[in-house]
View 1: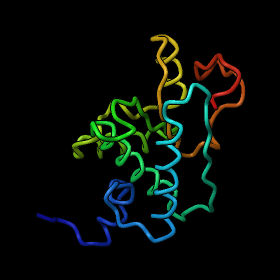
View 2: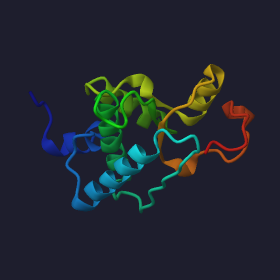
View 3: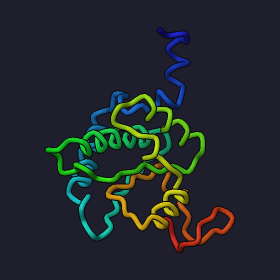
View 4: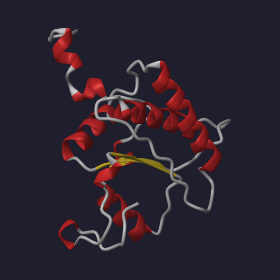
Length: 159
């Protein structure tokens, strides 16, 4: 079943970002808090922002992947407050986006079209006149803070 040694598998992005990766107690507490906030604010008319800060390598993306998987599981659970919500995970890097889509192809609750780059997502939502319930952004510090015609972004701020 496995053609590579453990250290090779563990260093692949698809392993690092797996929504099933075991979380530390601190990461589990953060995940629980994020899920509570999402359930509380997912149907608000007003936009709500929850920001996670941390040094590089502490596992923010791992938590985000796990959170998003849980959100999507709850989105199909009729007894959940998140039932029928439209949710997305955005990432700026093409390779990270590819990794998330590869994960989605192998995880029942995830769909490839729930992952996108910020500019593409914003433009699609605007064109379709739709609004998402929950949008998680990995590497949010890379969001554009002003229009950028080169990247096809004509708004004032991606956040």
